Length: 135
Length: 381
View 1 (cartoon, chains in turn orange, green):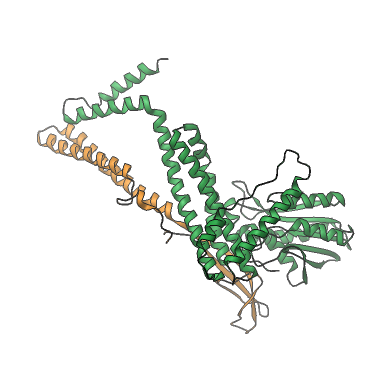
View 2: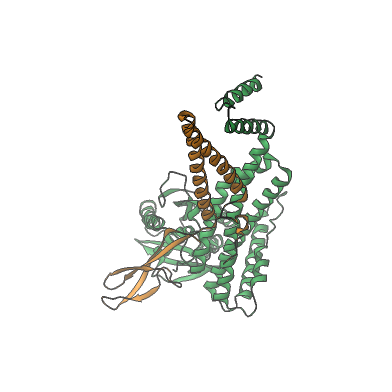
């Protein structure tokens, strides 16, 4: 491992500033929910709806920010990888074969043996297909 | 001028959304007041801090990729070169190497000075790689050189962005930070490209930049070739009564060769009896253009510092030879990444374009130089 400095994201993989903001919003949302239930029991349904809406919105926002932040961290530390494939063609019978790239492969190299006629197969194509590899 | 009273009215209206008849209303009013006054006096500072946060995020990504570059280079040197001593300190020293370009106050002859410096740098770099990887063969040495150059580029980009980030944080100057923040998307794109290069040079797969070399390789495959300049080969290919002198860097190791020297040597060998020069190279595509599409034009199709381009233009002028160009379009992120199938297909289209050009614009008996420009990693001849 290269030892990336993840110490800036010590708690749940999110930054300290964001964690403080989330805790603050959480406290307000909790208070709002409490007042909402209190207002509901005191026969103030309009006020109760407002408080309950604010409380649930606050918690929804926390959830959204939490997961969004985590995906950002994953993106920061992911290194793109490309899947490379090699295409071989038999000089004698024209059989084509595609297999994953092996170290030492290069274009026009005489590589594998033909499975059909036992002739020599040449590498005619090497190309990459993109895929993301999360670290 | 009435911005402030308007803002105060707006604030009062916002505050009345939740009247302070209860606890939460009071808390909300206090928060609104605080936010309003903080924003009134610290708006620019907040904007600066937000920009710094964005740059910091990008810097973390740059650091992750830079560290990966060093790790991959170190692993490759250990695996391929089998050094007796720990190569890490030497690799760290290589990553910090630099090149000072010649003074251009008096530009006459500056290209030859630059050529000299580039040659010295290449020789020194090759010697360094041979020292840390004594067991590596010629191809592997070239691939390791390319791998270390990618790691060097990542290191230098990271350090420059870090410099501006720290400077911006120290001074809290919006304009310093803004400059970095504005170019970040392009820089990140370039860095992503270099991170793909690490994989390509470690494994030795063809890269997007090799499209030109691939065209030359396809034309010269099966014909006798010889070395015409440092790390550069030529093959004489008969084609419908004409003679094609096909030039490319010597593969399959990572190499760009010296196409300028090769073209000059070929023309001088034949006493100037060459009718045309056709150059094929990968070119940056604009957004919206198709990957691997080809375009034809005139001039010397070759990038880099400009030394090789200058040599080709000089010799073409001296012998009054027309220069034709075929470009294979690709994105900046594809240049050093493993070659995509669309670029591979583009190279096949370019081979057909070369053949069509020769049929249509040259007469039988003519000699034409065809130069496939680009890094020939993973492409033999």
